[in-house]
Length: 540
Ligand SMILES: [Zn+2]
Image (cartoon, rainbow, N blue to C red; front, side, top):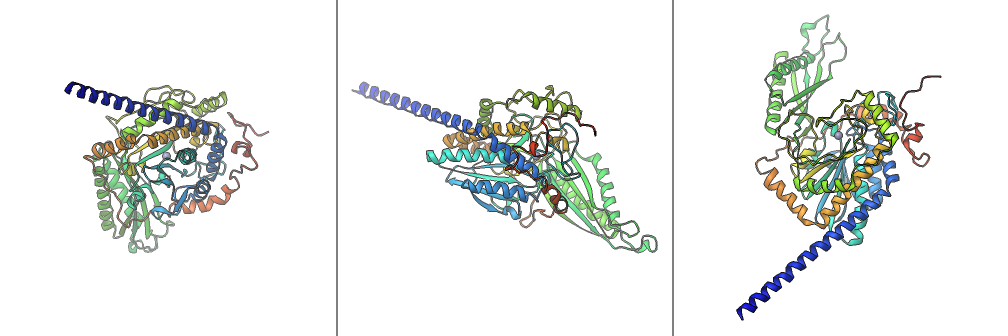
């Protein structure tokens, strides 16, 4: 009796286990089928990808002034059923687009701003601005949001048909070059209920990493001094020079460098050095980026810089105020999401580059004197043909750049997916980085990248374990000992005044070169560029 009872329990258990296994398998095969479907659908979207990438490229807008870009992209999202909330974080060009219902809430973002003086014709391997001295996409931020929008629209179609729960949230990294928006979004609660975030960034390969990214966080802060003017020859003893204060502040900081850790980076520009030499400058200002590897070290540099500004104000009899213009934490990214995403990177793989793409890449590498090898010791020769490995936390870092995506990553499980739309070995923040950004290299990179993001979205929507593991890593790994503290006060405004003057000056000239897809197949065609043009033709 007892024996047969035991036997039936065992049997029942066995049936249950096989049933579970079957359910798991059928979910897996369903997921795989949906991923295959969305990848195929995105392959058919290469024309749309090209238009969006070229259009955004042609707007060439700097941080906080991305009005055309934001209008264009939100219009596409609205047409596709997303609801837009504009002006988030007190930033006119920022927004959040939402579609779906219930959990999981998945945010998809990318930066949209350009680089000063980076205007450059695409597809030509020499310097030739579209508009002399105008801004341009010398970082490639014209490609990331087109990529995530493509993914989201195709995944939405599947979610509707399959009646899948979940909410897709699209958002732009406004003024990333000024690290000026993401900490504000976080402070104002826009990421409060978000379960996961996939951020995309242009690169010359496909990759993702998790853990400590090894980069620096920063504060961007402007010090404004005010003294009093006087005739610089007639009565200089009556003047109190604000420029003296700026210069003394810079001297003090440059002496301080000797006693800072080698991981720090600090740099400044004088934003106001007075008006003309015969007037003792009553106003002067200097803008600092202070970067370090930890919150504590950034904070200590920030506090010291404020102390120095007050000290030189005392020395010169001037008054000083400071304003925080931007901030970012050092990066740390989510392991379970990175692992899930990396599987899709392997499935999708790098785009197929043709001879023209490779010719342009090699000519640009020659043009910029690209290093022979990358930081991993891999040869730099043309476009990437081997996908990057999945990288874990860095063990040693000598510091480097910053990205305010970190502020979101310390609040929400986040990864940065890098997609291949640029040429390896370019210097970054340079006109040469714009050359590929409205060519087939960028277009193919964006389509390939959109497939990876879409496939990962399908994974997250069909497998709740990814979201649960991501939350667990975030809570019990990443933020167990390190707690996020913002550098912002409750009322610190976003520095939306930045770049206004430059855009007011150049927008009318750039407008003449906005891409018109109703007349031209590509932006290259509109500009009359044969792809690729490797050498500048002499004047006949
Ligand atoms: Zn960037």
